Image: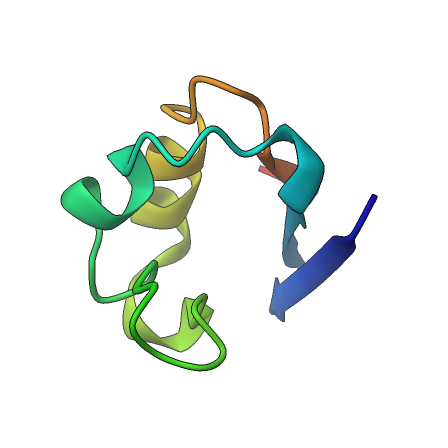
Amino acid sequence: MAIKKYNKEDLTVKWQSDLCTHSGNCARGLIEVFNPKKVPWINLDNAGKDRIIDQVKKCPSGALSIVGKE
């Protein structure tokens, strides 16, 4: 299983590729952060922590999750 972590201040977003069902919720809800057409496809610098946390919580498969303080 590929696991990648992306950091912003005290926030870490973890992505587990094997769990991803490619629903697109992340990109549709916050394309400035979750953009599968860019490398890296997650850029936490493009939105505030609260917006990122809210969007990650909408991931139906649990492939995206929050590590650290919320």
